[in-house]
Length: 69
Length: 363
Image 1 (cartoon, rainbow over the protein chains, first blue to last red):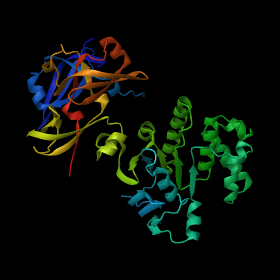
Image 2 (cartoon, each protein chain N blue to C red; image 1 turned 135 degrees about the vertical axis):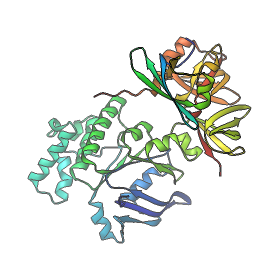
Image 3 (tube, helix red, strand yellow; image 1 turned 180 degrees about the horizontal axis):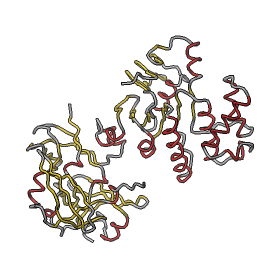
């Protein structure tokens, strides 16, 4: 294992909303679940993110909240 | 904004030659759970006791719903609207039920109503079955439940609590905190609680006040205080273990590049170049990667290469200190630590997002 983050979720970029400083990226996972990420505008450009491109959502276990109905 | 139930003004306490408390203004709002946090000796308990009228400050006044409490008679009347729970349950050597009804009798409630109310509160705290048992036979957790039931049966306008869960073992504490949180939500009784436990504060507080060396350093919503501490003292206390001095060396479209030692750290901030700042980063926000992982494949803007200098397991997590020119602390799961085979002396890349950084500007 090369990365300490425990959750590495593969998906495709569904939507990109560009703001003044940040960009909101929505990834659609194979299950249909969507994950939203806020990254800097520059990082989004550096990664060459575009609609339909494959990307990973990387989430540390300590950042995940659990809720029940 | 609701008028404060209680407001302390120009509160000062001097013990010997030591100024243990100096607070210009401190408000308790109706229905809130206000948690006072701070390290040992910061004046938390002194402040709580002054607010509860159990300790006379060297100087300052207390206002109740906007009216200054002027004399002993007014103090006594007000004290009857308060209830206090201490770290020790302080139960009398009689039955659990009598411990709860005693305070009600002292406040002139007749026996039948007192018993009814006491049983209701013992029930809410899950110990109605122990009502006729001697208080001496209770476990630590049961005794504190009885103590809380006794306080809440009085239907106080303000409930004061001084580290009420500190003496309990972890599972007992967790169960009681969960029950107490539900009761607070149901009753909305105004509560002022002292603790040095961050998790208790995050679970229970509507507002958090941080006291350091007798001064109120910050008061606000829990997420504000924990994510945006106003100074290094508060940052250290609320668990921001990476607190680093630096200077903004560049500013570009809302991203400040801060120089810390010889490293550059990007932060989402409008602060201009030349600003002296303190960089705050929670260790939970740092991800570690083997040096082979290409930095350009991640959206995180910060990738610092360093050497693992210390490994310290904490329960299911491991606290890793990395020398990147300055010590940087990361918290990762024990499983990731084992899978990555991390050892001291190993080179590693610490990555974190620009939005995980909070900059405190120096005035």
